[in-house]
Image 1 (cartoon, helix red, strand yellow):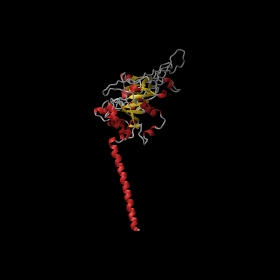
Image 2: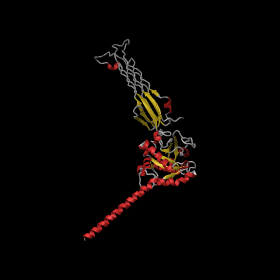
Image 3: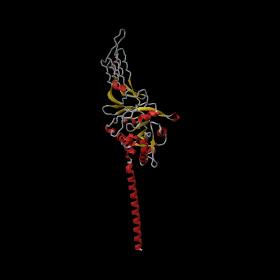
Image 4: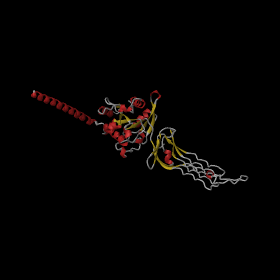
Length: 398
């Protein structure tokens, strides 16, 4: 099935039926008065979140939706029939916006959630409602009101607990295929994965969580490079990010630390909220000899930023259990995650893209520390010199 996560549609609620103008003309009925019934209400357009759908594909093929109008009023005091609402089912995680202004109308984040996006018109009153003691034969009725008409933008943001980010070919699809039943396409060329993939990861004590593989992130993605940032919306709802760093990229002349910084910069540029998501740093493809040789240098560079690195080989399964345990600690722990992310001291297993992006590069950390140490030594020397001068002046006065 084709994955569609953004579509524009038009909806039109039903118009209300008009009230009737009628008078009773029946044999043996004295003084027949007005008998025009009311018009029925038009149907509204309602969105309903469902877990049975995972894409907005249906809305791509049909982009115009109209609810039925209410029935007009009739004689003999008969009201028109009101129309049923038009219920449109959308995947859980769909955000409905006004296409013109971009204003968010509703976020369908819970299964079964409903929202009236276009209100149906109200039926008009028949002339029976306008009869009074002084106006016994009203020859007019009320028209029904038109239903609302809107142009909408539907945007799907996948609901996942863990989002996997990283450069193309970093092993994201391999990882999700090892820990869940998801079977994305895996190949040895960039941009193999063209759409996000979801997988349910079983964990200990009958617990489980949903993991999402996010494709298309490269340097400059926020400006449209590669697949652009069209899929970054799918990690906005994730509770924790797993940042995969391909250490085997050293064989092609790339720097893993620079790749790590590039992805964090793109996450920060896209959204401040996304930049503050808890993140686990994972060194992947350690089954490759060159990657194993590059591991100590990468770990040392991250230690200078007080970031703990998890080791992983998606191909052999090495480190999978430790990674799932780390994800579970973030997802199921009752401790304050914010304090854990910002804690000082030992290397942190949980960081954020914003703090990692602002951290000094490994090759610049040492000179900064030396500079601070030199300033402290100079301050101490100045203080000692001042004390010595003060002592000599006291002796001279005595």
